[in-house]
Length: 101
Image 1: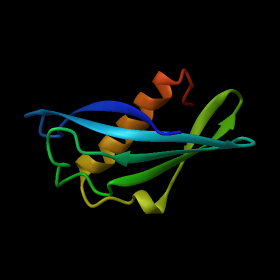
Image 2 (image 1 turned 180 degrees about the vertical axis):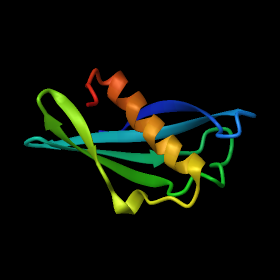
Image 3 (image 1 turned 90 degrees about the vertical axis):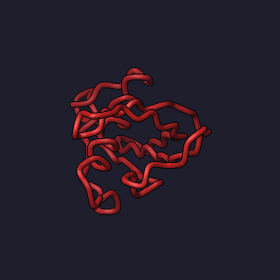
Image 4 (image 1 turned 45 degrees about the vertical axis):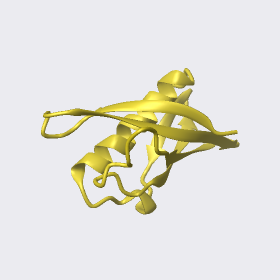
């Protein structure tokens, strides 16, 4: 089931904060977790710097904390997209009361 969440991201140049609505789903198989996120349009168009528009964050549960695994598919072309993906994951994990290690 996809759940909505708004990510408020401060651009790396610190000039503006952008609010981006994403839908996310969490799937767990044993100690492996996959968070799938899809950027959706709200009142504004999807920011051009935010690519890919769909991304997955994989992590493994180790001693009660989720450790993020590197995902080549999320390899971005710019700093803001990479930082946005990290912030989206941290925000989702906090909302779901899961600890990142």
